[in-house]
Image 1 (cartoon, helix red, strand yellow):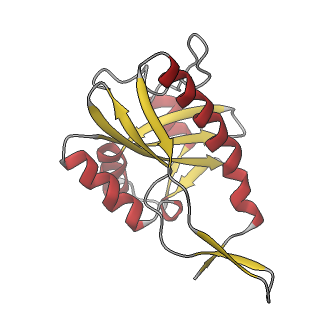
Image 2 (cartoon, rainbow, N blue to C red; image 1 turned 180 degrees about the vertical axis):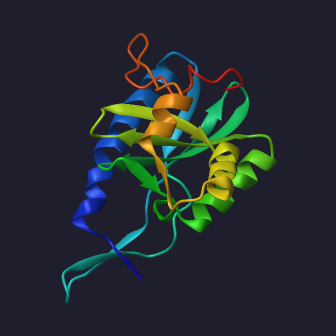
Image 3 (tube, rainbow, N blue to C red; image 1 turned 135 degrees about the vertical axis):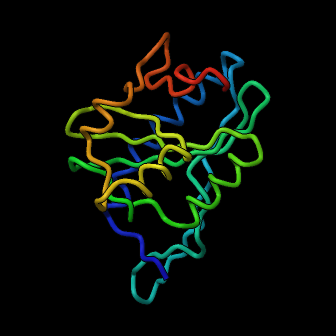
Length: 164
């Protein structure tokens, strides 16, 4: 069993911010994206909560006729450890990509107040080629453009993608 920790609520802020962006996408007719609920059970005897099953990813939806699926990661360090991304998340996103959908991670570096989009194929290439256990913030800063805001959308993560 995987126990829910207070640290898990750290990512709630990012999920809520992305959910608001998704409402704006829907209002503008750009995309329909929903948060995937996490199945949690509460043990009244011990007072602990736990995940009943492995979730897939945080969000799924459709944009410009293509399925999109992504997971959000809120990072308080200078790198994102590969072990922050679970095998079942990688597998799910790879399958979405193989079937023609858009599959990616949205990674928020809290210290820098910057959000980055990392497609699953790029993530897998980095994981296989990087001789370390994490992707440093400097990679994102130097190699990726951060997700910017546009109109009423705080994190316009679809605006940086030509095919979605």
